[in-house]
Length: 358
Image 1 (cartoon, rainbow, N blue to C red):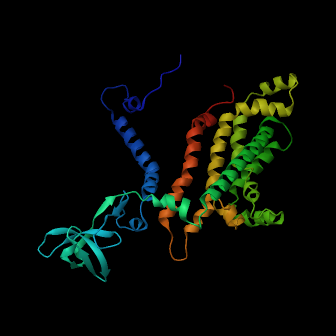
Image 2 (cartoon, rainbow, N blue to C red; image 1 turned 90 degrees about the vertical axis):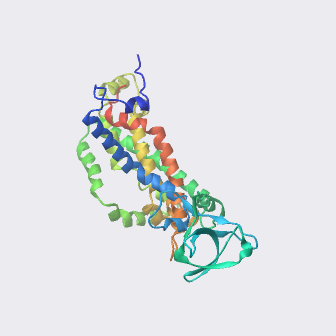
Image 3 (cartoon, rainbow, N blue to C red; image 1 turned 60 degrees about the vertical axis):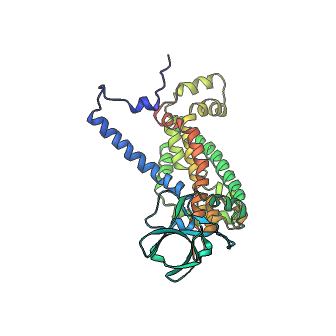
């Protein structure tokens, strides 16, 4: 009989066999709470900051929620005026709208009684009236209005690079892992050690040689120049090989006796049994390719071939970085990764901890 699923409330109410919480229970929940804050705190801060205006991002101390100054409409003025809470000379406070500011002096007006005329106020005697308001234009402007950021072209390029590169990575790495785990030949272990040793080579060492190769075959400013160089990864070969070693050789021998070819064994036996490990590698590959910035920045110089990560560089000017757009588009680029992880996360534990037999 299948085990009953535990709800979140039941899980949080678990105790060490007693009705009252034990010291270890308190320490465990404290540890989990701190870990949750450290893990998800930066993400929540990123999402909250993506709804702030450019001025709201430079406030000190930085607020958690996206506050914006209240704008009011005053009769006789064409545009909305910022609202302040002004401390008058008699110590009372009054909400007034700013008409203009000259140095440390601001000209204010009562929005409820604009006929009373202007009042000169020192800027130290006022505080802005703010409200929690989401700056949706941070998301809408790059998608619709900004000419220097072609979001949908960058999104298409990122999807092509990530999906094609992940598919090629799974095929090539699984073939190499199959050969290194199920075939006996001279130098097999030496080849495997050679693959793993490439992890110690810094990526900056091979950037120039790989770029020269890509340029010589005409793949500069071409998505294939971004896809192919990282198709075979030592991490993927290691992960799949270690998993395939747990698949009994008797299954392969039985298939050969039945007349199955090596390609049939690989496609119909090895890949289905290695599906959890393939899912784990797919998650890693999607994360690597989707978030890759340095290599696409080197290979691609034409705007039509930019990926999303390279396209975000358009918000960096010579004198100012448009952080409100950068943060908003960063949140957008995180959504596909989150979706892929949510779909495949159940394979992570089984892909590492279980064997090939089901």
